[in-house]
Amino acid sequence: MKASDLFVKCLENENIEFVFGVPGEENADLMMSLSKSDSVRFVLTRHEQGGAFMAEVYGRLTGNPAGALGTLGPGATNLMTGVADANMDRAPMLVITGQADTERLHKESHQVMDVVSMFKPVTKWAQTVFHPDNIPEIIRKAVRLARTEKPGACMIELPEDIAEKDASTEPIPVRRFRRPVPDDKIVNRAFEAIKSAKRPIILAGNGCIRRRASKQLRNLVEKTGIGVVSTFMAKGCVDMDSDACCYTIGLQAKDYPALAIEQSDLIITLGYDMVEYHPKLWNPDSRHRIIHCDFIPAEIDENYPIEVEVVGDLAHTLWMLNERIDAEGGSLEFDHTHTRKCRAAMKADFEQHAEDDTEGATRPQKALWDARQVMGPEDILLSDVGAHKMWIARYYQCHEPNTCLIPNGFCSMGFALPGAIAASLVHPDRRVMAVCGDAGFLMNVQEMETAKRIGVNPVVMVWQDNAYGLIAWKQENQFGSHTDLAFSNPDWVKLAESFGWNGYFCERSKDLAATLEEAFNADGPSLVAVPIDYRENMLLSKRLGNIAVSI
Image 1 (cartoon, rainbow, N blue to C red):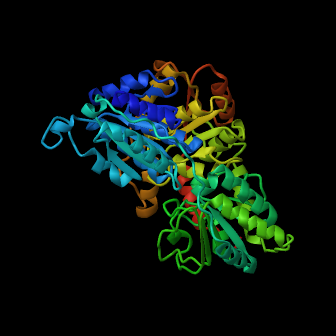
Image 2 (image 1 turned 180 degrees about the horizontal axis):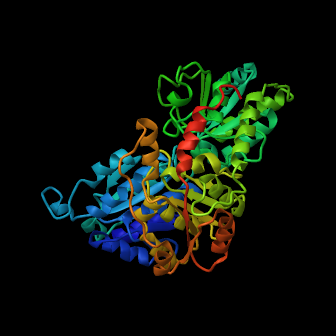
Image 3 (image 1 turned 90 degrees about the vertical axis):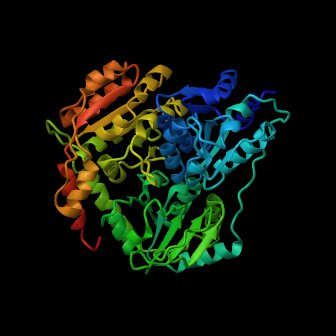
């Protein structure tokens, strides 16, 4: 069997459904083999970065990796940003690159660079195929590592001369394994610490959006009433309508959830990565008692002093705690005043601008209120990176896990449009909306053509402010002024029409909900441009700075 055919057979064996990207000369054999597959679909993108973001979102939504493909040299470097974003936000991904003939890799040669070494810092594992018979082992290892908690990206480089050789091996059977679970004694210690607390709070992180973990977390919250603050990544791990939902933390400013943490005597972190929101920001004096529950041991940090560390499958850990709670007969009693006041204060903020009727520019709060109204509980909103991300993080809350996808760890602009394409492929029966700034949207605008060509129908809402708004916001906060960050934009409706999309320009707040509904009901993908009132940025900063010390 030809090596490239074996490579594709191994992908099929691993149940890889999609490969996204841009081919080149050096992976021509692999592309021809992919074209013969009945189960692996290759999606041609307009830029390798767009392909990597699509693979990332597929991985986030399914828990299985998709392929992100590029050729050697610039094709590989173009993948890097999306790969790094996926790896830092714990999305499984299989990165596949071509490479030159191995007979010229030892010397200066056209487009040749050490791609594997370049990818090592942003993947869990990166490896060249040196012999065609090694392909089954390499693919089995890469996919297993990509799926293993914490998930991430694994990279395989296939040189062109290896791809065309004959191979004598076969795909390795896939055997799933159960994750290790924590010891009873350490769970007992964690349970005793929880019982001794008066005002506990849960800080839920990325690991809590796994379906089993979210189910067990909801059970625990129902039994105990303990309030839950989530990171940007953990939105929806507890239903936004639950009395215990204290919404989201992560704005690097004193907000109500931060005060709720400050007033707690025990912090229970679940599936939490420091890259999501550093403990120095919520535990600056290192005084809090912390129980850390996660799939892997915690990062060492002076602001994260752990009293009890429970390492093992997170869903099983929560199940073990629930079993102990049941054995107590529901006799645990806590003071939830601080978390319920936090929830009430945040909820009042969310509703403040629901009835806005402004002309010319829409407040961010109103735009997200309307977005939430037109999206169902299982519909998917994706945020790009910019000032709008801060507003989405605070104001857009969720009923279910994985229904608000935000690039958080690596935090790359250009994520949302290609991500929305992948989300539409995974869940064609759901509404999918990308919210982008005008800067981030234009970074991968070329993928509008991909969406139209492959027949997916997301809605993209672009917040127009004609500037790098988040940078202006941060500079203004720090220095009292900002540098020149302004730029011009295209005619959004004409841009949409030129790609075969439906185009809308909404200049009045009261019309936005109806415009979004019309966009979702239209035939084909839709672009909705909204002039946004970012004067609200500094008003929010000022208000957060003046939040009362007691809630």
